[in-house]
Length: 231
Image (cartoon, rainbow, N blue to C red; front, top):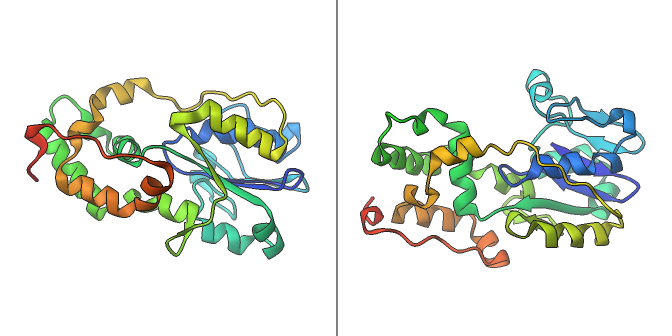
């Protein structure tokens, strides 16, 4: 989804597999009245005087409407008055892209993590997904426009407490209760060691796509075992 608060003048751009649903659930109360805030994952869109909340979950799937989950930054910009887009503080949530992309792949391709699929076949499917699926590049358009990031800050999964505190201070949000939503340890456990899915070609692909995140936030590629050093 996308979230916009007029009282606190922020725009939240939601990426994939970055504690993003928990973030949006925590910040809903700054964007809508209490009766328009949802208790769980699924919700309809809200557009009112307090702000905007995009739809998510089954509500999003039924009818995307103007405001919806994981909305590209260019679409958000085009749907808002220019003064709002230019003047509001824009942020997103991030995670080491090497790890995040494995998590995203696992979410989209659950059958590949069934017991009957070999690790070699799983790795081949992941490398193919990185190079050919638009899902692998979605975050680039969520926090950027025409290849240029548009965010003023990011909350990193690896530094949640620190970055959330800085965000609350920057936006004068006070004390915020951060729920844990859509955490699926069972699915992640089936992935095992996420580093095992990488090959040199896959590492190069991620480094090329997400070079800005690596340079800006110091993320590093994982080291490969000997069995992973051929594509």
